[in-house]
Length: 168
Image (cartoon, rainbow, N blue to C red; front, side, top):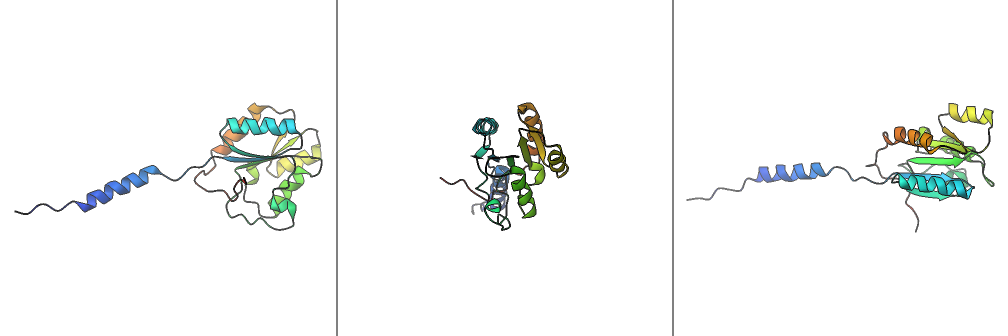
C-alpha cells in the first residue's frame, strides 16, 4: 500500500492565482501646488486632500530642481500626478516655471498641469492654453476643476511610483 503523492501543480496554481489576484501596489495621487496667495493655496490644498490626494503646497516654486538651476529633470518617474501654479507670484512667475519644466524634461505631462490666474493676460492665456495647460481664472469654480481632474484621473497609473518623496 502506497500513499498518493501530494499534487504539487495544483498548489502552485492556487498560489499563483492568489498572487495575481492581489494586483499591483496602488499609491495615492499627488498634487503639487504653487501659489503665493495663502488663501488660494489652502483652498486648493484642502480641495485636493478631500479628493484623496497627497498634497504638497508651496508659496514659492523653490522645490523644483528645474527652477532652482538650469539642469534637466533627473527624475525617471514623474514627481507628481498634477501640478498647479499661479501665473504670477511675488518672487517667481508660475508660467515660466511650467515652461522651463517642459523644456528641461519634466515627466509630468503638460495636460496634467494647470495655471491659476487672478488677472487676464489674453496673450499669455492663449499661449498657455495652446501649449496644453489647463487655465483656471480666480475666483475659480471647483466644479470646473473637478471636471478637469475627473478626465485627468482616468489616465493616471497609480501603480507607477513617483520620483520624489515628501521630506519629513
